[in-house]
Image (cartoon, rainbow, N blue to C red; front, side, top):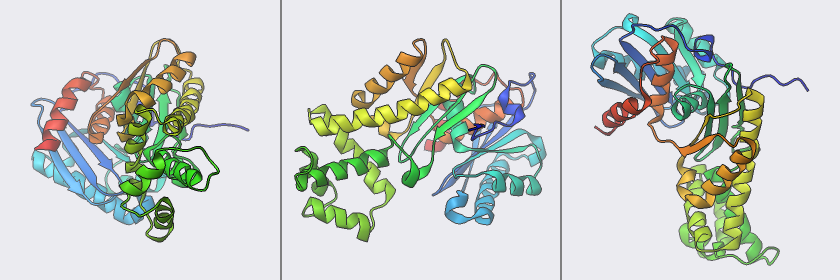
Length: 340
């Protein structure tokens, strides 16, 4: 089988650009529930925000997604008191399985300089400062993306809850319910999950939770939320709960290994862990780090936190040659603006 990258970096993002003098950057984070845009004034450090509705094409369609993206962008641009022509660059990072249609609509409405990428690319920028390295996302869903020293990009995972999302909060929550059901029917080992599952979902029994999965149905977010209960039981010694986190870590580690190998990463590089599932702590982090270091002993594995729109701004800085934008400074500026 001929394997080509599932996610291609635009040329201006694949390699650092010559030093530029842009003052204003636009970054947009588009998701299934909301859109957040930010204009960063590099001279003053001010961050101007704009908000919009869902912009995941899979959820709302291309037309509504583009309207939300551009509406949020225009609000942020207006709040900054500038016009679009003053932007040094603009990067829109959006969730969804395919960004091609969105990119075409955005270019038609604005210019070719407005870049549209998958949101996993923005996560990579957060995890690595838009340099060689890997981003590992494990929230409600999961995805892994990395870029090698020569600009080669590779993605593994990200196929959604029906075909993938291994090692995600949803996957861990669903596997926990399955383990409780196996205990209930005596086809699997005993586990404290059997009591924790109905208590968490306010149901009279494990089998009643199974009915909720199909009849309510429980949302991905509701199922994913149970993963932290599983982690708590794992920390307290429940063998089944601990095994689920080991299995989830192994699934993610296999995807990380594919990204490292296919992107040509070697030596020292960062692997950033992003998402709510990593709140489980050492029961999840330790087996992932162990597996990574077996393949890449010099890799630095660390939790990374930044508002997702910050990744879009880092990409925008890279696109116009403002590599002097420090990630730590951006975290402070963006987090303060979002919290205000």
